[in-house]
Length: 172
Ligand SMILES: [Zn+2]
Image 1 (cartoon, rainbow, N blue to C red):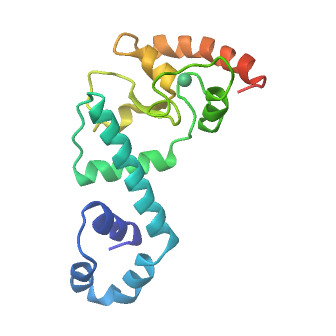
Image 2: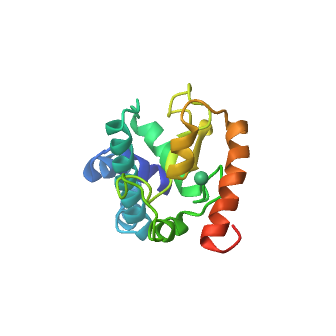
């Protein structure tokens, strides 16, 4: 068992720490260290964050049902994906600034719009198809719906990008 496999087993498969120690008696010291590591806490926090995000999406009517393996894949994807909108390239850390601009109204804020959302490039594939997932800002995700293809919406994203650059007064 590697360190990463331990995290998956403990956090995503919810196997008890004592059970894991019994299964890998020669790794007892390593397991103790892994359990107390910053990495463990980070993954635990990521998992809560993603679980809440998925819960919100399910409440919004999305059909999502991840098993622990798929959730772990989603976590790895999330961790390594740049936090910018795939379509308009808006970085996540500029969202707050856009929302705080005068005259800017989003009735669904803060439920939606304060962080990047998970979008399926091809809307007829399930969320468990991780290769099909991208991060998108609320506005791109909302406008893309199931109507536009990835290639079509990348063109619209370029237009959105120019609008954000004007509003934020900087290049993205
Ligand atoms: Zn966008």
